Structures are given as structure tokens and as C-alpha cells.
Image 1 (tube, rainbow, N blue to C red):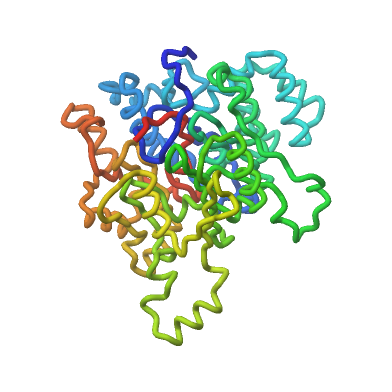
Image 2: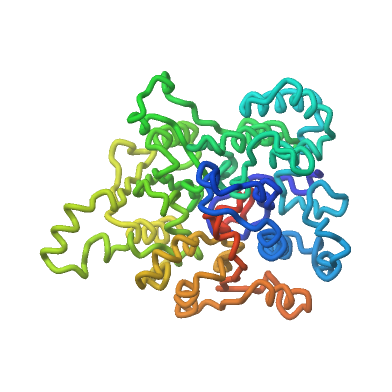
Length: 483
């Protein structure tokens, strides 16, 4: 990979124009998930691999390339998707792979790391130790060429149907392996055993790939607490687990950290101390949400669309949290009996760390960010999952209506199945367009990505939505323009 653009890592917002990101397209491991192991591997269901690739994720690849690296794709769609080409454009191990330096495939990066013999020895030994492989298997892996070895390490499949160790189907959710904060990378510590290999691969890629060589001293890892392995099962809060879906960079000085099913309070504690000590940010807001599979990470209950527009689950709105629509008896009962359903928001400032600021509800925090961090005036707009109508609000949040990726301010990717949420966007003045139609307009020169404003691009999602993650989850931004 060349270094035409010297700035590789720089993210100071959720909505600045996206210039470079890490992704991983669905590999054969997803086609190995069986019902009996689905939940162990953090899937709610099994997916149809051919559909998730050809009819869904391939559109994600195409739209990303059109916005970030258009010369790879403009005017070539018919050729790229011709049956004779067998999708080789999308396959990292094939000569026809798109090899973009802007839309960067993790399998490709890993293959390049594995070209170094010493690193290959260490990584294969590490993977085999984690997965309990035999010495014979370890030797067999070392004999593979880098591109094939990368594919095997990720998919778990040697050749044909030979499964050496479990797949890592969640590797498509690249957001969770780490997060870029200004010019630093914070690596994760996954909460679930099924994601251990993902964290290992991310560590080897960031510390060893030439792309990140200038940033070696800016790669952050949070340590475990001393004697963490002696903690009883009910000592989970002292365990250090962190996933990128619980971390949002909302301005160059302000970071959000979720405490959730996947990110522990101790991790938030460690992150606050580390980032303040290194003066990377000035404010860190901790958002503690209910530890429920429904929510998982904070980016499943809200994401940013514009500096003054957010999409969120209405259950955490001011009206609901304050029980404004309830009668007196209901307000008292609900307030006293449903504490576990609430969120707690605490904001720490580096200059006055022992004087935190508290927020009563999510809307109050997001309004404060838009006004005080991003300089917005006037009313801050909230678009609600399912248009804030039961049961569509919770149904559509489950299929990631709040988990949107901003390609630029106001232009976001979302699932086509969340009809009521899409309706809410239309009512708020956003244009809504299916990705297939938009790509045709790009090819014909009718519209250009740079000219788009206030648009929701609808992505096919019948199979992708089964994996319990949206496009915010399926992206690790490395570089965004400042807003």
C-alpha cells in the first residue's frame, strides 16, 4: 500500500466527510454458523451467505467506493457485476480485487502483515494457542501463502469444508475492534470469548502494518485490573471489557463512552484516566444503559446524522424518562419500579474531574453536544426509531434503525426494512433513495456524491439485519474531515 495521503488516522466527529475506513466483507465463516452455536457466536439466527454477499453487502462496498474512491468503480459497474467475473472484484484473495486505499479490507491488510516471516510465526502460534490447535495444524498453516493464510485465520476454514477452528462471524462489525480518537487508536477488549481472535488480529494489524507505522506510539490499549482473574463471577464490573460500538467521538475535545452489556464500568474508568492523562480529549461522558441484548452498545440506541440532527430510540427521550405523559400514580410507580430500565449520564471534564455534570436523559446530552461542542443554534432535531410509535419503535430498533453511518454530514446509510423510521426521516425533510437507484444515477452522471445533502440511502437488509448490527457497526472510520 502506498502513502499518497500522509494523514491516515484523524477522526474528530461522527459526521465529518468520511475519507478512509476499515471494513470486512462477509467471509465463508458466516456460512458455517449453525443454529446450535449461533448464540455462542453472538448471532440470533443463521444467514444465507450468497444473499448477504451478492444482494446486500456488495451494495455497501459499491456505495463506499463511490463516495470515497470513485475511480475504482465509476463507469465499471456492469463489468464488475458480470456473471463471468464471479464477484472477484469483492474477493481479497483474487487478482481482480478492488484494493482500495480508502475502503480498506481487513483481510487484505492481514495478508500483507503475514508476508513478514517473523510476524507470521508469532501470529500463527498465537491463533493456534487461542484456538487449541495441534502442532501439526500449526505447521500446516505456516506453509500457506499469506493471502490464503489470512483467509483461513479469519474464516477458520482451510479448504473446501475443512473447519480448523470456529469462524469469527462478527468480524464484519469492524467498529468494535477499535476506535480512532483524534490521531489515536483505542483498541478494544471484547466482552465475549467469540471475539477474542478479532482483538488479536486487530492488534497485529495496527502494530505491524506499514500503513500505521507513523502512529505506533498512538495506539492505546487499556490494561486489565490487577488480579482480575481472581474475581468472582459477580465481580464483572471490575473486569475490563470495551467494544467500539460503545465509543463515539462527537468533537475533537469530547468522547462518549457507553457502559453496557459489552463495555464495563472499569473499562470506562481506565479510558477516562488514560485519555485525560495523555490530554487527548477534554471531556468524557459516560452513558450507562441497561445491560440488555436489545441494546448491546450505545450506537444501537442513537447515532448522529448532522451536527443538529440525531436518530434515537424514544424510550430514552426526555418525555419518556420524565414520564411526562403518565398520570400521577403511574409516574410514581414507573419511576420507582423500573430503575434498571433507565440510563445514567455522567460527564467528566479534565480540568475539574471531581466536579462531574449529570444529565437526566439522552436528549438533554445530545442537545448539549450540538449546541456547546458543535456550535449549533436553534432547535436540535430528533428523529425517532419507528417514528416513536409502539410497537414499531422497538421492532425497528432491533433491526438497527438507530445504527446509521454518516458518509458526510446529513447523508447516511440505513436498512430498507425500517419503514416507520424512514417515514420519520421523510417528515423531517430528508430525501430517501434506494441504493440500487442511486448507483444507477451515479453511473449516468445524473447526481454526484459531493452534491448530496440530507439523504437516507436505503440498503437491502433481509439477511444483514439478522446479524444484529447496522452500518455504524460495519465501519471503523480512520479518517474524517473536520466539521
